[in-house]
Length: 188
Length: 201
Image 1 (cartoon, rainbow over the protein chains, first blue to last red):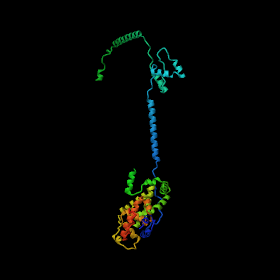
Image 2 (cartoon, each protein chain N blue to C red; image 1 turned 90 degrees about the horizontal axis):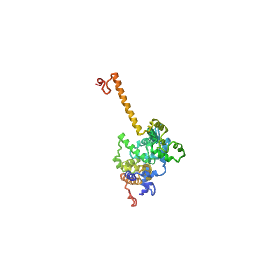
Image 3 (cartoon, chains in turn blue, yellow; image 1 turned 60 degrees about the vertical axis):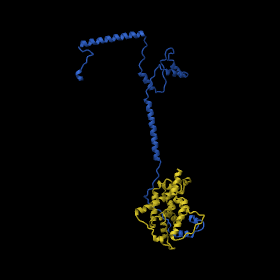
Image 4 (tube, chains in turn orange, yellow; image 1 turned 120 degrees about the vertical axis):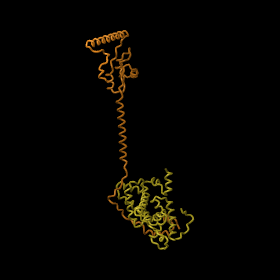
């Protein structure tokens, strides 16, 4: 028996195998057309486009949220209060001295006294700077110790007079003393 | 990964799919792609290519009268589910699996049993009809049944059976030799001693 004939019909023909082939070959598949109904729906492969669209939307949303938070933080940052006697401003001015554009501002500074009128340059918006200038109180006048002692004496005398006038007014109007407790019945 | 695939190949006796994946797209892959793109007429070519295999697998399992209708059902089912096939090169393996499952479903639903009677097995008339021999084949263990039907009924060679069903060539060769030996015994034909150089599997 030649096994090659059984395997791939090559080599010496095996009579038994050939007889089996001829006999059983009568049962072989007879080609028939495939009847595909028109209503049959062929499934489609899942497209990746919807997933990609969702991923892109999520990415865009993340970027938009990031930008919004960054913008909001930038807005919430308090305005930097500009003080004329700030030391870093001096350093900044010194660093910026070589620039010719700084010269007009430096002319405002009195070189003999403390550098008080110096505008600090920073990256904050101009409107914040303006707001801080509006809120800032005026600088107190410089007084000598003798002047300060005189001012204290005047203030004490004014307070004494004011208190005496108050007492006199209450006596003329028949009002109780200012330290007495009034309207106790309402409290209870 | 490769180890797992190799282990699966050993147990299932199937060809590794990576071999077919590395080559350029097969005819089956192109046809499947066309069908999925709306050219449903191209499925007729796949039907022509694989109908004998489906017919043979069914013939080894269900009554012959039911085979033709089941072939149609199986191909329509395959057409409906074609989009679920991930590897187009494995179409034959996938279709063979559908066919085997459909044959099992046939018996589950109809509760019919096909008896391969002892009378047939014991009959030793030299002029056997094709149906009698087919019944004898169906009385063999399942592993040999399908291979013998594809070889003798459908006229496929061993390499063709291996490539269509996804079985390894070695498995098909073993099934053929052992199946023929058993068939000869049941038919009452004393097989000739094999040449020493040929391995039985």
